[in-house]
Image 1 (spheres, one colour):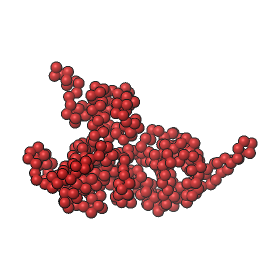
Image 2: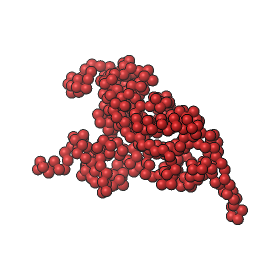
Image 3: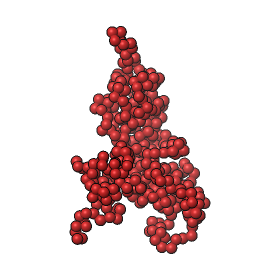
Image 4: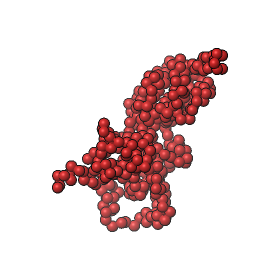
Length: 372
């Protein structure tokens, strides 16, 4: 069934499908959680985290999308292997779910090195970092997620480790204080951040390789969905894969999560294949529209339009009106809305675009003045 036929069936007489059984089974148990945005954002359950690991590629040759980044990484990896040297320190930036953690593990695999993974908030003291660094062997990878959230003391402590493969720590106090230098084995630090602007200049300058990951194109996401469906042992139609990819906000993590939810609907419908109609119906039930916007996205746009007359509005006022954390809006919600052209950032605040009015089926103030 193609997209046109699906829309006609949706508007016309409802066909007798196994979805009637799904409606009866699911409606009574309220399958759609109130916090539906968790399905399409960086939040994931323990089960989803385990499944994500199994769907992640392990080699650069298996990685889909980010062609420029992959091409440059291949050259850097090949050169480091030929020189038999550890790779230079790498900084990966970009919105959540685009493959920064996946790339860090792929780099370790390609370099035949052990990887030690941690996160910025988890390292509270310099002593925590000493234990990690001293246990690294030559050529090992240290992956620090959300590196922009490293405490200032820890960040300054890591400078000599990155630059000279040594750490300085002080023993005793007062007149008996002594500084001891400890030599480290050469290692590679891979840092991942969703907000590269919060990195201090001294830390940023010590990375030799910089890569920014951007949102994926629909074609690349379609290939990812088909690959994941194969790993999950379920058949999927080309149109269904494209529909899931189109509603995935340009993010592979979201594409994989939506695929698993659509697979649930197909299983309950006793369908061995994810068809286009099943994909559309299940995604509609999840309240994810054809542009990939969920309830929270639409709520942000509607609030700016209805409460603040389309903007501009400051992030503090917007967060207060939505009863949401500022960081959640800035890090999770805004990036895709800005990229898709529904939102603009100005010196005075956030402003919605004409595209947002059209998507929500609303009339802008300019058109209202023209009408009256």
